[in-house]
Length: 395
Image (cartoon, rainbow, N blue to C red; front, side, top):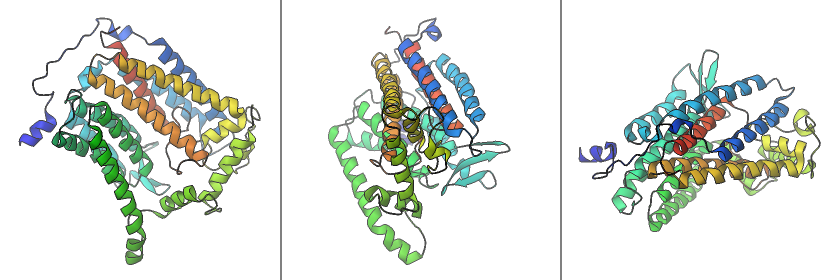
């Protein structure tokens, strides 16, 4: 019972709330952050339009509608005082579990690309695991902020680690390793910002590395014993092998990687021009609007266009860190840094896999990849960051 009280307690024992909220807090705007976000969204829509143009598998109006709905959600979360979300560890933990397991329900759950990660209700379909990214961020911030930046006791660190590991373990049941890695990265960022001792972080990394080695060692043995995929699915193994050896599986994942590199390289310095991405329009580049959308951008707008995108991401994250620095409490700081950390990880992984520098996963490129679920989540994250700026008294 004492443990449950510790986990679900509203605030750090003995801590007093020091919230300073301006009566006009909802009107405060961090203009550099907001302007960067607007330009990035517009740029993303231009790339998305070109990537979906003439492709019956995608609907640009649906992507645009995702932006409209996203703006509405952003405004809602911007107006909400983020302090009100800081006390609900168990609530966000339950929300995580429910969202992740929604696709497991019969009839409404859908399997796409080897993972049962979609939820379909009538004409509506979405990925609950994407929406869970927001609750993972809020859960992590709730947990570590309870310790006031002094997460230096082994039992406290282990407790926080185990709570934040729950969403990761749940998402692996789909299995959706890409989204799971995002959860894992968010948790790691939260622990570091939350004051975890360096040796605890290093021990955790060592355990994860040992688990990965054990996974690759046991996987072929268990597969041979059972005659089926037990730990790693065939497509997951193929993607990892392609990362290690780009010449592997040239008819499958290896082919995808080769075409991605060709698309990026063919763009040159200034690109082939808008709607002239022949690799995608001629069908050579698979998943051109989602996983490999950066290749479409690079082919059309070249190195300069890619540099513009990276500059926008850098500006967005830099201004986000500035907002985090000005937060008047640890919860707000952790929320903003975790969101920015998530964006950094997704950008590096998505662009890295297109260039052959990272394993191929289904991690989207923020504000650019096709997908309504992803777009709504990113706009909610914008709203949370703007809420942190609006509802504190340090500016």
